[in-house]
Length: 261
Image 1 (cartoon, rainbow, N blue to C red):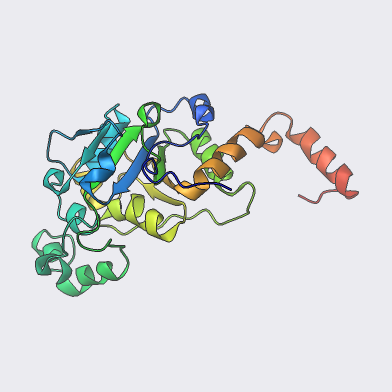
Image 2 (image 1 turned 180 degrees about the horizontal axis):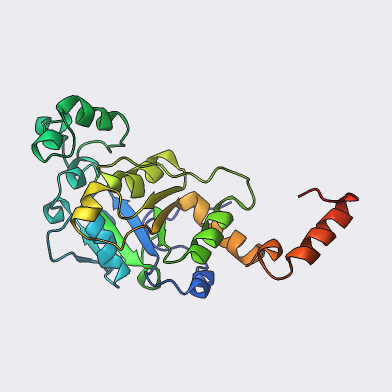
């Protein structure tokens, strides 16, 4: 019978992430975690972030090699307070008043509707959020966040997410609060989600990332499965190579048909 290691429940478990090195990502994959109380930080060896920035910028900070935790005081953007569970959703935001004032939406009713789509953790349920590039992970991540810098990387990562399940490749976003779809939505829903840089208002405003790159958020219970798929699946599909004709012949022969695809 197994036994729960309560004291060590937040510490890094045995995930073999070495296959990610093969991608040669320009931007390091990042582990992310929600921590409920200050005591959860014990033994993780993380230092508090030494600046006040937007939540999406914290991901970029970790991609550059930063390993840290952030509290409400480090959040420079209001969604980083109420989406994370650091604090309340204040009326000036929930009423939709921010959008028209900053010319993001024409009126409050459009902006207000966004709050029907985003995921908010309960007020006061989060003390800190933790970030680390995968080579500096000391905690077991709630999310493995991968940003691809070319189409070949993207195709392989997204193919790995559904290689053994046939699940949909999902991309859910709203124009504002793009951080929701990177962090809180996949954490709560349990679904892998892809967000595209250069579209969401805040990430574009802060110039956090180059445009039109996919950020793929993989919840904890999918991490080992996706990593296993990356190891097991063909790295390049034969049909996408100079062997395409032979691959088609071989497939048709196996089925006993001609010209099926």
